[in-house]
Amino acid sequence: MSDAIDHPLSQPPEDRYRLTTSDGVDIDAVLLRGAEPRTTAVVLANGFTGTYRNPNTRAVAEALLPVGDVMTFDFRGHHGSGGLSTVGNSEIHDLEAVVVRLRELGYTSVSVVGFSMGAAVAVRHAAIYGGTAAVVSVSGPSRWYYKGTRRMRLLHLGIGGSVGRFLLRSFRKVRVIDQEWDPRPAEPREVAGEISPTPLLVVHGDADTYFPVSHATAIHDAAREPRDLWIVPGMGHAERAVTPGLAVRIRDWLAERTGPEEG
Image 1 (cartoon, rainbow, N blue to C red):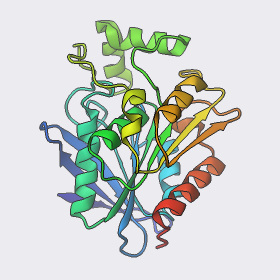
Image 2: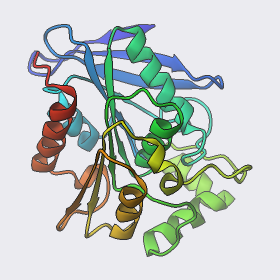
Image 3: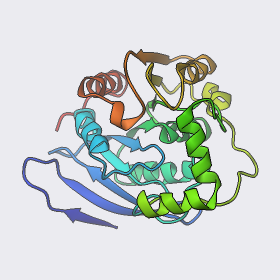
Image 4: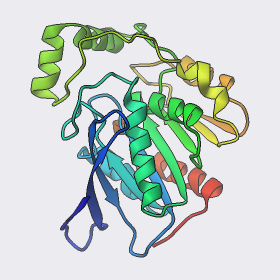
């Protein structure tokens, strides 16, 4: 079921959807559409604490519209979606629910662009479910439980304790599960080789304060062709670090592999 949202004429049309995952979680999603019906779509998968309401996410979504219609959504436990965040484990069901809905709507080509946690989910989803036209991993981790940077140590402290989870719930509208993974899901670097023959683009900034460049090279090295690696000088972390120029580069990469759909 979708509810159309009115916007000024200068903004692209959009429809809001409530999706249900295979494990019964409600997902809040929005589809940005071109002026004419199209068969190509792109999914944006946010990082941890991210939301489709964020101006950075919206800017990337609008930059990718020449490639196809763009669906953005909130992962479980985030903002308007139900359930609890598992910080990258069960979230593959959220992404699959989005991809399935797009196919039900008639899109025959669906690509995924993920950021940070969303990048890990995108890599795992492509390896486990398959069927996507292309995958872009931006600022993604190659392995779990990484604590090699101050920001990641603070993040683990936040999600690992009751006080941190309370603060996330109160100030970031993110509800995190209070259980550890059992069993541990496969790491992105462990499954990247299963993405082929789907094209994979790995994008990472050399000024990322969460994950060093070694995470990007580990994913790229583990993947098989077709694959590309962009190490972006001066780029920070995830959605907020994506400049208009980089968004255009990603758009063009997707267009070369899926075909542009102006409209």
